[in-house]
Image (cartoon, rainbow, N blue to C red; front, side, top):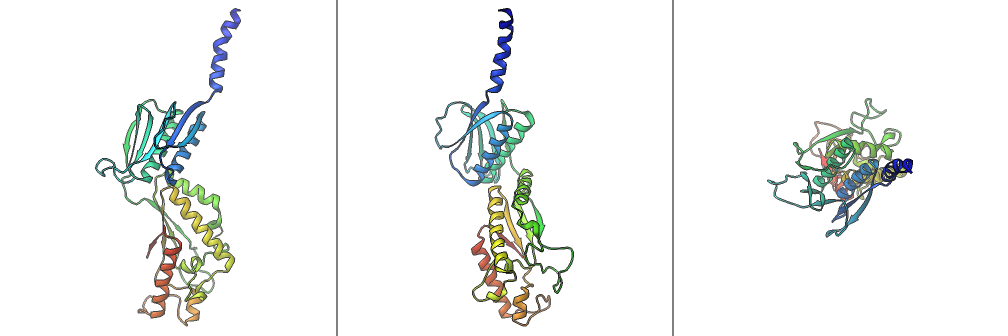
Length: 289
């Protein structure tokens, strides 16, 4: 009987440790960045032994410990762009962002603190924001050597030239790295990307990749920009307006690039329509000349 009494606290402790701690994560609006942030938060909590339940509810009546995540525009003086606050209130821990990216960053900040402490904080009151407006990295769809028959900056986007561009797992890991470091922009560098990404009715001959590669490029660019947007990352495509595609140049008996040439109507029209088609096909992507 004495042994049983001694074992009872041990059994209770074992049963308690086998029973995961429950936590409810509540979002009033399933916006992509809030959902991404809540998923990352739930993943971290699960690693620390919590059982997470996620609800979409603007007026939660859920009982038990709760993390409430919301985006609520407030005065920039109170919470600047991409800013967030995390605090313990009567209904649990509240994460509030002044915009979707701020909400995402609030989720990631709480996730980082849970990883460091191994548990949810008992007390927390944090308000923060990034110091710089644009924070990003550049990736070159370029090579350290010239392609045969090509000049500088002339690199069609193909699996032969850039096999890594088509690796979705690599892109996912890289974009995760960027958002972990709170970067909000990604600059893709290529001299003339349009001939690998858009088709023009007036210049069908300008495309410089085959049909199968063109479709792969469209799918990959859509994937990259969609995944980047979930992480609050703005993709910006760089190009040089002095460069045209090789098929376009050959068809019109022109050089692919010539810094000293003046305005040529056919090049001006081609470039303008290329930019318009790019914006139409990839409306969330920026362009940088």
